[in-house]
Amino acid sequence: MNYYAVLLSMKDEEKSKELRPQHLAFLEQMRKEKKVFMNGPFTDGAGGLVIYAADNLDEAVSFLKQDPYVINGARDWEIHEWAMQTDVDFEF
Image (cartoon, rainbow, N blue to C red; front, side, top):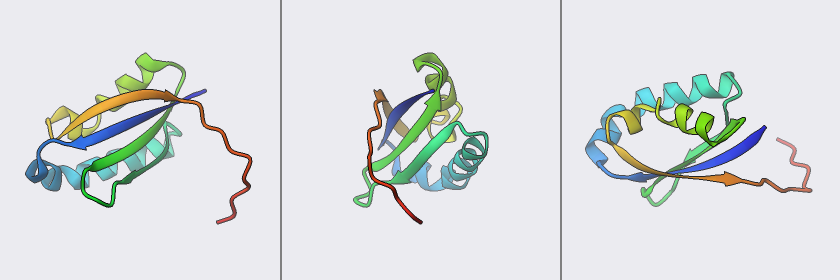
């Protein structure tokens, strides 16, 4: 399994507000399916970050292109394979 970091930069703030419930429902379903590792908005309002778990770049892009933000042109996107490294044990 590989990880892909997707930067979803703000393109249309009004569309983003309108589509937010659909976007969040999409991400929740993708997390349940173990296709999203983590996600969250940037606190400055510039957009957000989604980390997809996929076998390859094409699969990650196919997941991304199902996001209502992307489908409806509310956000621009940029994707990069991410080599997660951590030796910290987090307890939540």
